[in-house]
Length: 135
Image 1 (cartoon, helix red, strand yellow):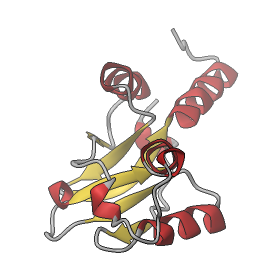
Image 2 (tube, rainbow, N blue to C red):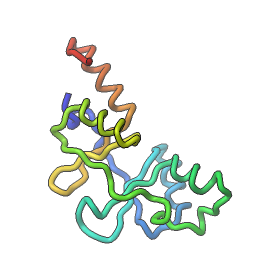
Image 3 (tube, one colour):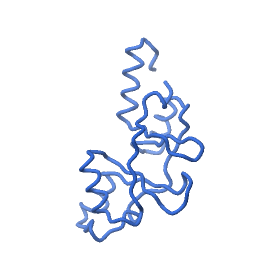
Image 4 (tube, rainbow, N blue to C red):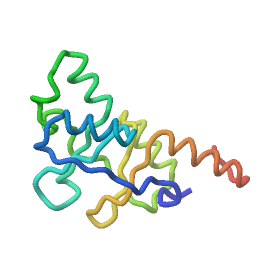
């Protein structure tokens, strides 16, 4: 199953120089677990990602004040990208090898979607329902 068949296409962005509190507010308000971080530049290598895990483990659990910490201080860069025509198994393998929970789907230097661990499991269920081999 190709990634473009089940990827999430609604991508939420935040500026790298905003404060972490802004990211927390956006993530909680939209009930999402990650945001694409916009660093200066205009290609896919100019983006990073901030996750709920980053915020909780790197800042909140250590008593950091999210009103005083820039998103750029916590975000991971560069994004892990994969082509929209890639197979879900390829995405799962990259996620396993790099120990990440999401991979961004890119086309010609543009982010067009994101695939998470839950999405990979969803794809496996869809394939099974279609009678396709999941193994």
